Length: 118
Image (cartoon, rainbow, N blue to C red; front, side, top):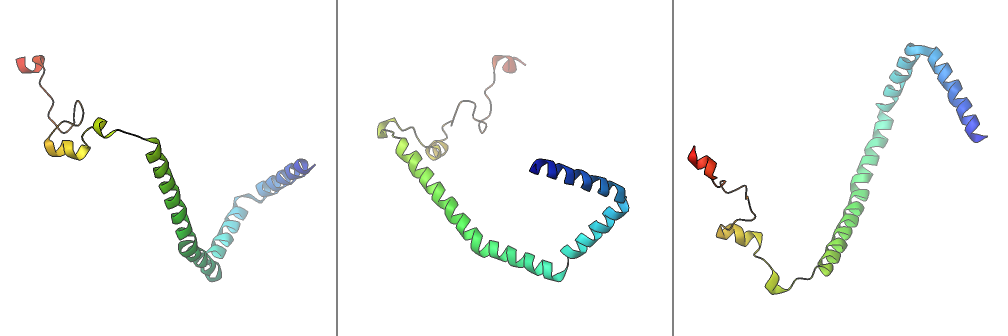
């Protein structure tokens, strides 16, 4: 029954809106814009923004920080590596000039036989 009432209301609203036409739409749009830009409404908007900035932002930052710490702790506890099996770090490779991986984009490509014949 509730769905039927909703559909009937939506249909009636659509028909009446369509009959009102574009001119009525423009009137409604102008009135709503005037209301939105009015002083009292904008004061409430500013209060809401300030409340979000001072009250909500720190809470969100704390939640994100806590989630990041717990995720990092979980990942650290899952990863176990023996000291002898650890490869040189990226920084050590860069300092020594060692290639980070095959086809390192920072090193010039090696010439192939076809390129050297040209």
